[in-house]
Image (cartoon, rainbow, N blue to C red; front, side):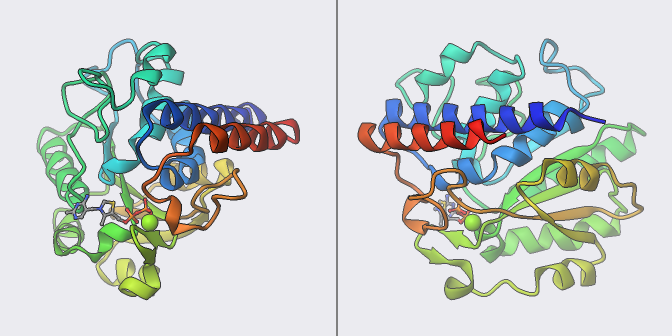
Length: 273
Ligand SMILES: Cc1ncc(C[n+]2csc(CCOP(=O)(O)OP(=O)(O)O)c2C)c(N)n1
Ligand SMILES: [Mg+2]
């Protein structure tokens, strides 16, 4: 059984890292990274079969971040699990940094794909998972995707293809935060009923509370004959009350002032853990 208190504290630490990184960078996305801190903690500190000292280890599970703009949370999870030094987090978005505003394959240990243009991650996962099956390998492919990306055709082509090849080595996790760049998802282009859609495309699909680390771990480790989608219900901006559920925080960083307030609020959350 994982130490859940330790994991909740780690997610809080990662949220604080995200705020500090974004204030220092002066640009970037805030709502998504805060919302997904628990999912990334569950993956990097429990679920994944990985070795931060050997990022290219042959038997590792692969992680694809399709919604590349939430990469501050990926970078913080990688640094906190030992892929590179924590102090490098403060170079986010700086000229020449390995931590670009969107992930760049080959630039940093632990980054498997380049992303930023939305809608390609599930396709990439299908390709990787099929190759692994052909090689009779046991590695799993975890793909993180967003609800906004499900407005894109490429996403659904990949969803259609995965069951054809019985790719039960894919575990997809959606940041179901109900917001996208300029509004609520159901106002921009309705996605529901998402679970039924995935099931009708022949995936296993379940909804979990995206802030319940124990539930996320359990969902990730379920066995199935089908590819799986875990719809993680998250609160964008989670932990910082004045950011929560506001799409206006999709793509802007906190000012230094707002950053201080945000860190105080996260410290309060931490004290209650
Ligand atoms: C192909 C493509 N089209 C448009 C964009 C611009 N864009 C960046 S983030 C975003 C919103 C996507 O929604 P979601 O990922 O759900 O946003 P979040 O929940 O993180 O606020 C858009 C349209 C992009 N990066 N790629
Ligand atoms: Mg979204």
